[in-house]
Image (cartoon, rainbow, N blue to C red; front, side, top):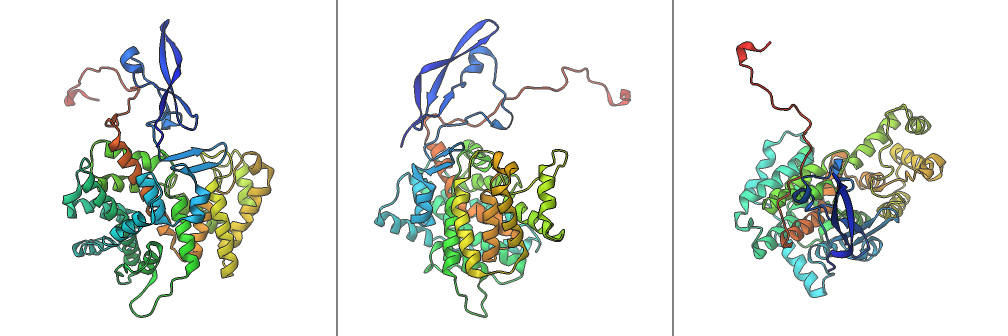
Length: 435
């Protein structure tokens, strides 16, 4: 594991004719940053960076991302290699423990997760209290938060044994919690997990099996889901990961921290983008599939319409995850020969984005949300469950960042500053004198 190192060079800032030197730090991939942690104590000034676009909140050894070159690596391993050669549980181990597991370590990790797939029977009653049309992400965050009431033996973030069992419980139970939320919405009976099955197989069975008939698990669906979970497993200091770290910095237990991350992921500008993408495709279909009309609207600067699933805030090149998912997407659609107007519209939009100079010059390529939504649709995952699948995939990344933060000797509770822009001191006016 490579730690962030302090460079010999410094940055200089002049404030009120006084020159201040700030240390420059450099990461293992030559990323450079200016350490402003002592700026306020030395000068009384703070930095302002709306949305933290140019602010590093921490140093981390988990994920490396280069948006200019389209690079994504977990613990140094290229995402392309992991998606092709690993299963999701193996990637979970890598992210959380920092190394690829030996065969013995992986067998032990799988066995422990399998022992925790069941939910406490009292938790099944929770689902009766949710409205049938409740969004699965609302159910997911609620039930994950409630885990802390059932497992009070593992809430101490400073106890390694308690942290480990919480990690295994979350990895094991999140697919069960998610599948139950879908069964609730469909009115079907809840399906217990089958610990003889692998991680993705077990989830698909809990989602789609019914007691009245046998369920055949399509191996291509398993392969596609495994790949989708891997490419979503971590993505550096994004909104939900930063939320998990911020909540965890207050020494909140792991269940509460992950529940908060799920809420952040639910937003349509974050994990909800794949759901928004499919909703957009359906909107185009309802308008006679007029792709050209919506492409023109996207190009029109005076029009507020935005094509969902294209471009990325970080990647200024092709999203490497989208490249991986596109291959799987093409194979699935070719195999299944589905006659669905959504897939037709998606292919036509993809062709425009890859060939139209407006999109190519601005590097507005189809992103991970575009292709993942199409694959989920092909597998039979309902639209409201798309972001839930994202949460299952992102779980090991959240856990890894939460654990890394707690292991850091420089850990502090997160407490951003602000520049106050409200009223200055005012004289209080009694109620009877207010007009």
